[in-house]
Amino acid sequence: MIRLWDKDDRAIGMECIAKALGKKEVIDALALARVDQSSEIFGAIRADLSEKANRAIPLVDKYINDDGAGRAVYKKLQSLRNERLAHRQVKTKARATGATATDEEIEDFYQDNSKLVHILLSIFNAMAYDPEDTARVFGFYASHFWGAFQKTGNGAR
Image 1 (cartoon, rainbow, N blue to C red):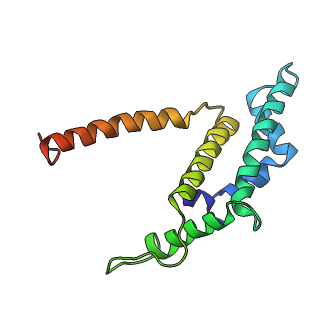
Image 2 (tube, rainbow, N blue to C red; image 1 turned 135 degrees about the horizontal axis):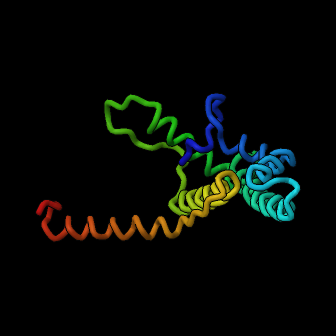
């Protein structure tokens, strides 16, 4: 999840997306991709895309701005990923040191990312995505997996 927020010239991250969504010409181009500008509904589509962009941008700003409410959480998670998970060859068991994010902070970050994915899929792909529905589906399968595992003691039948 933290990968979506990386600042890498080789990839498009959340900061780049938020900056683009703040530009009128980007919203116009997205609207034009859906309907001809002379269409009666062009204005409505453009307004809908602008409204969605105006919901996404503050979520991104929350984590990328130095004074954003989620900046400290983002930095903690980024540090954990960079120092303990992704960029380290571990010979011994890694132990997290320093400030760590709480479960509540991680959950908030996850929920905000889920909202962003929902909004961005709608803006860029005209796709409806319900993260809660996805969670229910995976939760259903997970409960059956763990139920089978507990019945047999190891999951084997």
